[in-house]
Length: 127
Image (tube, rainbow, N blue to C red):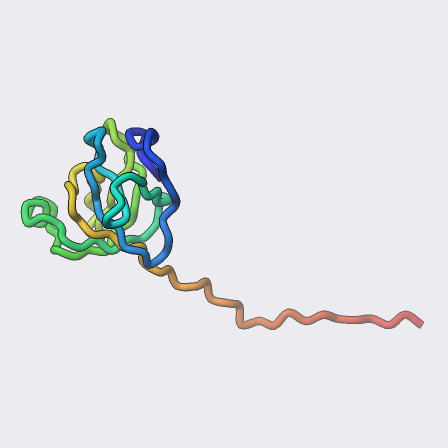
């Protein structure tokens, strides 16, 4: 969602396939914003899949990840900040630890498959 530390800023929900960047807001907290608009926090629902680009080499080494990763936006259970990222290798970090300048794109989720079974309407005639 939008961490408590960003409640004082204008906000809006994230949109699928839109690109965002981690941004340090004037309060000092890091959140997501549209490039060029660091006044509006972008709120992402928990369990949303994201593609991150530009992860620092320090974090890559410490977490065993690469420059680009597909992650899940997660609610952390501990710490002052609850917005976090869960990597494919199971490691979770606060959004604050990503730092500024990391690109994030909401990954389009595949549509739920439709059932192969046809629904049939049975009409009975009453005589």
